[in-house]
Image 1 (cartoon, rainbow, N blue to C red):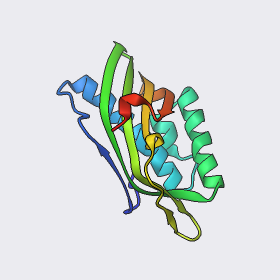
Image 2: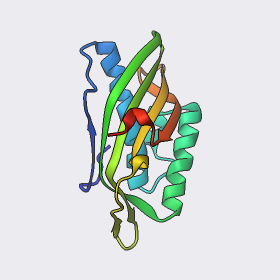
Image 3: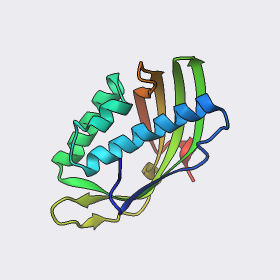
Image 4: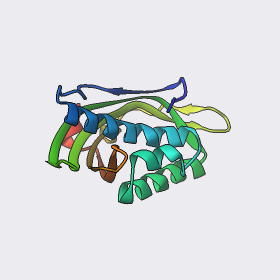
Length: 156
């Protein structure tokens, strides 16, 4: 997945030194990037989404992407993902929570290319809570995804 040149994602501190946890975190990050990629490609049914997500996470992400695409927007700017916490439930499932700083990410009108640079608010900081399951292809797919804007755990 190659994002447009005006869109960047940074994953701070997403390495633990443990190969299993690092694989889980890497796929959790790619699941997030798959959403951004689907928006920038104008494609709620992007194969990248179904590769890194399944179950309710996939359905929710496809709905989210569709709502942005239907509104005529894409993204511009940068998102920083940080404060990742991981807990393995067993050898085929795990939980990952992390924060997103979207204070420098903006909606961009698909037709006019105008970027809506609104000031950051507490809602620019999002707490994600996810469940991942190892599929038969060795991919840690995000199967459940919950987000909460303005969560105090992610406030600057």
